[in-house]
Image: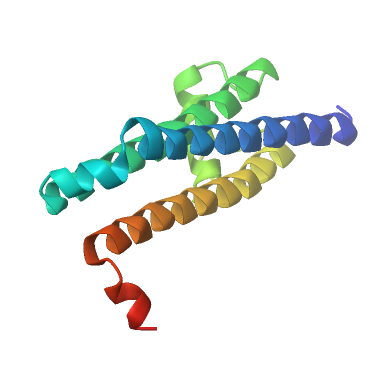
Length: 153
């Protein structure tokens, strides 16, 4: 197997993953700001409960996004013939995506490069998820405390 083909497959998967991440985070922000009417909801409800709901939705959405991407990588691992069981492919993919690197399952050469590329993708996607969660949390703090956050700077 040519390393160029493996690299190409990895780059295509990275592009698909980053597109999914960008589109889904945009959809999440749109959902929270327009349909959920975040500001109005937090003013009308008890702020603690409203914040809990918003953070719970955000966390669940980001988790599902990561699991979907892990599942896609696992599917690719199956398609290139590295796993007979989707369960094993999904486990291996999750370990790669989270950059745990247990090493209990190792793909054949040159397919190992896909694992490394998934790890790079996972670091970036999980970092973007963390930034999204931090942004939502900061918005909740601003809504809860109003201008007091701005004055303390």
